[in-house]
Amino acid sequence: MLLSTTVTFAAEELVVYSARNEQLIKPLFDAYTAETGTAIKFITDKEGPLLERLKAEGKNTPADMLITVDAGNLWLAAKEGVLAKVNSKTLKANIPAYLRDPDNRWFGLSVRARTIVYSTARVKPADLSTYEALGDASWKGRLCLRTSKKVYNQSLVAMMIARHGEAKTEEIVKSWVANLATDVFPDDTKLMEAIAAGQCDVGIVNTYYYGRLMMKQPESLLALFWPNQQDRGVHVNVSGAGVTAHSKHRAAAVKFLEWLSSKKAQNLFADENMEYPANPKFKPHAGVAAWGTFKPDTINVSKAGSLQAKAVMLMDRAGYK
Ligand code: FE
Image (cartoon, rainbow, N blue to C red; front, side):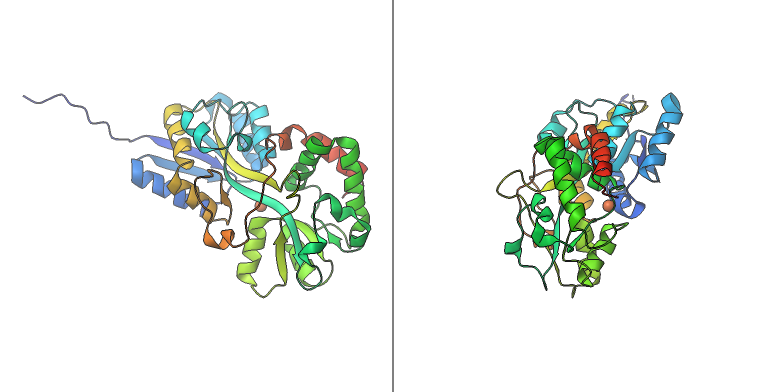
């Protein structure tokens, strides 16, 4: 007589929509499939089109998970109703509260700091202190900024509104604009190249762009500075993920999300892009750790979303292009 034991192979398949590119996510997906047997199909696109697609597909979406960058984008996806609440003890234990949605619809998985970069040829670290102080007269004609159209800067200013209120933040942003050496830059890399080339002396960039540039051009006379260590801390943001509101494989999707907060995935997720693991139990890659440790601003990153519209209008009023 045969025992009627049913062996359930994890033949399930998950579909991920990802605003992170294939090179960053494929190794993760392959590792998960190897470990669990769950196959992962994915498409990659910019965050805007992915959100539009999820909204248009509604209940019929094949997507089980959305992976994207910046809390501003994650917040918007949640607001548009495309993400499900996930009550997971594992995720709550693994991801610090300030790096996830207070309503549990998305979770930060890697952390990037948006910090000060400076010319080691023309600036001493002792000259630097805070983001706010980049508006001081001593930086007149020496500051470079990326465009205010980029969500990273909208999040940075949104967090300043959360900390200082709108009136003071507007004064600060105006003081930055008054110190600009040149027009705003389309991306962080061009900004750093301008500092290296002597066009300006300081700027604000995401840490991983600095890491990439220094890998390519290690001779660049650039260094990172961790501002606001005596007060609110360095502005950090996340890349993260949420389970879609209309996932047909909810339990499997939650399991995968939990796995993404575990050791193996955290290091794969962070190291590949020179970011910091969101789970504080795990150390960053040695190359990233070499930039030193810093105190992050632990205000909930969802503020980047809820204050984004105010930030955009404020930057416009302040003449920040
Ligand atoms: Fe980026």
